[in-house]
Image (cartoon, rainbow, N blue to C red):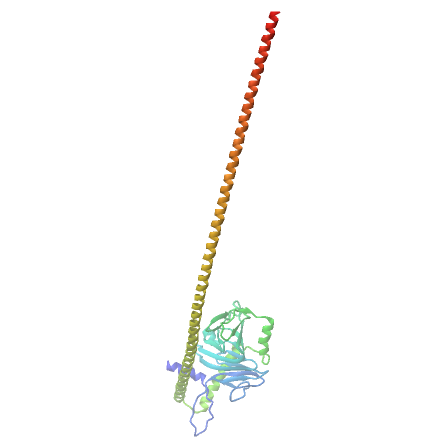
Length: 406
């Protein structure tokens, strides 16, 4: 495993040492690529950059207003930095024999356009761009990101699923602790702000595309052909070998120096990890303290709320009791009134019934009396008729007697 690391690093590490006869030789800077083109003012912390200059690991690249640069990395990835930008190459591991490796770059501000190379071709998940709001995971593609205050916009350029060149379909996974959004359609974009998950993937508008293009106006992006990238890589390797030979080092000496630098790099990484871990612990403690304070405040508020609730409950109970008493009194009054009304109504009904019964009896008596009178009249009439008949019969007899006498 150590031999493989030595072989890998032999191609990645470039010696930037001013050699003197009395000085010891050391290799500290790791070469990751060269400047392909520049426009305006582009510099690092220690030098101004020009086309053909070498770029080393952990160098911060600054571009001013109306400026930009294009970097060709050893794995043929192309990084184009737009105007008013700050980009750092944090990690670059590459094995030319297998095209395995890892790239991590961080964009502090401004714009970065990425065309992935051989590392992404071999393993799409091994190219990552870190931004203040989260991370962008490139999966064999071309994309651009713009970092502004509290916001990062990311655009997937391509290629599409059914491209004629037979290239791997482009995709960018935009994510943070709160969520993830996958851009897998060309010219789709998403935005990410602090404390929020990335927004949904949306098709870019004309105005938004103008903003992305404006960031790269100072430097026209030119994608190198495969032949050109191979020749660039060959030139870099030749330059590396020449410099090593120029230092008068033998193979064994070079190996030992590389081992020492690898060990130093590991130690630095361990220190950085420890510092980060300590920072995280301190942040966690602060967060826990804040949470504890918030919880105390919440508990105090809850207690107050409970007391207020109890007071309100007692008041409500008292009000309810009063209202229940009032309701009972009102009910009693209403029941008494209803009973009195019922009694009155029953008395009235009884009186009405008595009157009606009396009237009926009177009517019946009158009817009986009338009937009796009618019967009497009939009897009297019958008697009168009988008397008349008897008188008439007597008269007839008397007449008959008289006639006989004569």
